[in-house]
Length: 347
Image 1 (cartoon, rainbow, N blue to C red):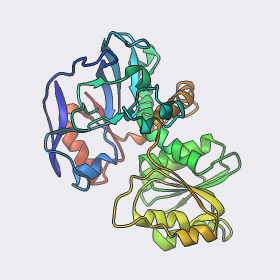
Image 2 (cartoon, rainbow, N blue to C red):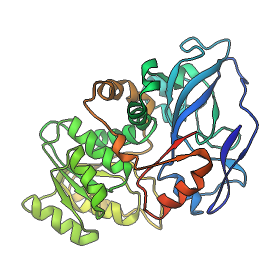
Image 3 (cartoon, rainbow, N blue to C red):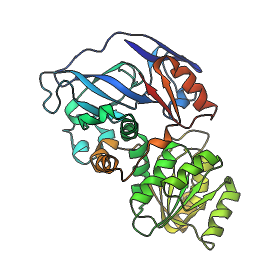
Image 4 (cartoon, rainbow, N blue to C red):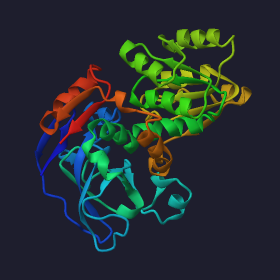
C-alpha cells in the first residue's frame, strides 16, 4: 500500500510500504477513507520533534473495517469507524477512568513500528477498546464524513481544553490560538453554554470561522497588547475560563495574563519552545488553576458524536484544503506556510 513517510525535516514522501495485516486476535485492518494533517505533525516536519528516517506519520483517520481478528467482538468487516489519535485496550484502570491516553498498552499512530493515519490502510490494535462505530450511511455523505473526522483529534482536544478550563453555562471564555484546535475550543465552549467567548487571532479567515463557531469577540493582538485588550473588553478583569491551544511560552503567558483571579486555564497546545511561560507565584497569588494535557478523545467521542449527527455542531469548516494521498507533501507545505488551516486527505 501507499503511506506517508517522514525521512528528515521537510522531507515528507508518499511511498510503497508493506500492507498491514492482523498480528493479534484483537486487531482489525482498516481501509482509510479520510485522514488529515495535524498542527502537531508540523513539529516533526520542521525538525522540532525527533523522528526516525522512514517513520510513518499521521494520527487522525476514519475508514472501513476490511479484516477483523478472531477476538474482535464489536466490529465486523464493512463497518464504518473513527479512530482516536491514541489506541487503548479499553480494559485497564486508566481506560476505566476515562484517561485512555495513559493506557499502558496504548500508543500513538505513526510511532515506531506502527502504521500512520496518512495512508491507504492501518492495523488497529485493541480494536474493541479503540474504535467507535459510525452510521453506515455516513460513508456516502462527503460533508458528514469530513465533520466526523474531527472526532479523531481536534474536536475532542478542543472539548478537553474547555472541560479543563471549567467552562459552564454563563461562563466568560477566552481562547488563545486560532488553529484548528483553538477553533474547536470555541465550538466546545459554546456547546457547554459559555455566554461570552473571546477568540485571540490575527488571521481573518480563521477568526471568521471562530465567529461562526460561537465567538462573540475577536482580539487580533499578541503578547501584552492582547492581555490589555482582553482585560479592557472585560472591564479590567480576565475570563473565568481560558483555553490555551498553542503551546509556546508566549501563549501560556498570555493565557495566565487574561485569566480572572480564581479562574482556570485548560491547556492542550503541545508544549514546544524554550520555556513554559508559567510563574507559579503569580498563579498562586491569583488562585489560577491549570488543567489539561493530551486529550483522551476516545472518552469524549460518544458524547460528541450525536451532536455532529444531529447537526447541532459542525466542525468541518476547519478543513480548508483537500488533497489526494499523492499530494500530502503539498499539504504539509501549505500548513507550514500558513496558507492552509487544516488539510483533509482523501486516499
